[in-house]
Length: 336
Image (cartoon, rainbow, N blue to C red; front, side, top):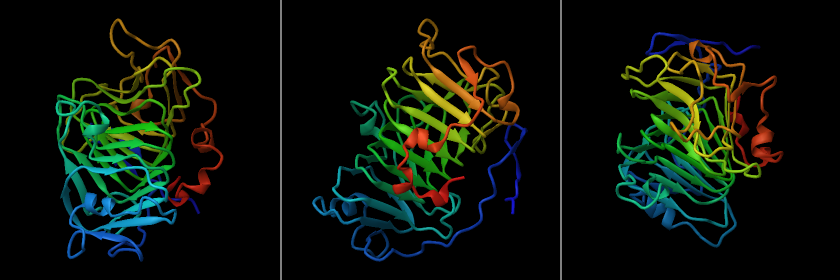
């Protein structure tokens, strides 16, 4: 049976086709067996204290459960020998909409030497899954300030929410997946240098700004594996944000081999008719870019696109981005 399709009215007034309706899943009100627990009456009161208690020598999978609440801290997960899963308490695991766990702080590059050091979650380990957690950087306009620094291979974020302004998600290295999640920002808010990231059924929301850019891919050579694909998703204005028509671009090239695809994605008229932007006046960086689209819809998918972008004749497959073994580490129940 075909899944029902709903229409969502964006705050700019344009109707867009939403991804297939998500049906509620079972909740996660208590910790799965064997997990370290954070918050409430649990032993660990901060997320970092539970991370610090993980074994760094065991190869047996480990997990952390975070109880409902707001945790004002930065969290650093260094390389482990085991897989790690971090769960947030929720009454519905299907998406971010019922999340009850928020980790938040406001560090920015004004305070730090590099982007990674500003992130609310600094994820440096392989084989990481994160479910139903809100990651927020409250810094706002004025400096790079990350909600997530994803800096290793085989990382998956499911039903999560990411909020920032500039540089919200650093998808920097390794294969990564973001599914049924919410991503908010204004400037280069999905960016990185060598990461291969698949975004599936994500709700991308843009903030009020005179001009904005969703992606800033830093692929610097033809041998660099970096590849961002936004699949079966939607782009519109964030709640209570009056975003003018055409203010946003799907991406601009941080480096001149930037590679980004938007496919089967609905876009309101917040997206400029050109679709894609140069890096800056006098420093265009477009000679080798791969800025592509396939089967997008909505007012933002129309217009005369930039001459350095192109329309594809077929969709990019997930295995092209993440590798043929993606089934071994991706929770495919969250994919389209």
